Length: 128
Image (cartoon, rainbow, N blue to C red; front, top):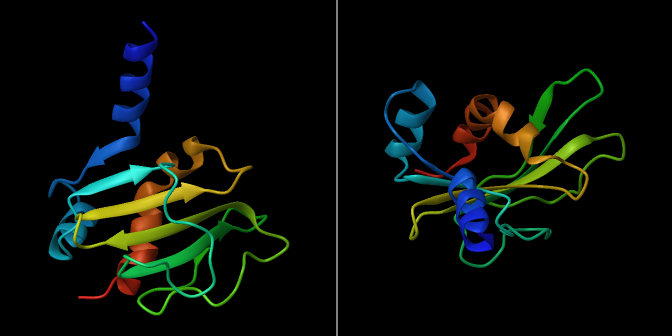
């Protein structure tokens, strides 16, 4: 039973990208076909982690507005001290994966509930 629970959790965190939404079409244009939530990547670094074509941080402010930084050059700053529900994103074009990982206090539900908004914000930062 433990194996079934683990497989269910993994499948819930792996989201195949389809062209059914505008955001899905955008990601497919960049070659991204899978979104992985909270799988340990990307790591928290300044700059860009090795093996990724894009990297950055995102967060929500106290009003719930989501903001992002970074891109092809990586992220030069940390999360603001007032950030709520911070997260990291990374694009690995070789694996065709977009990673989204929350900070320790950020629930995966936040990423799932705001996935389309997050994609809209980071898409211009993903290199062509």
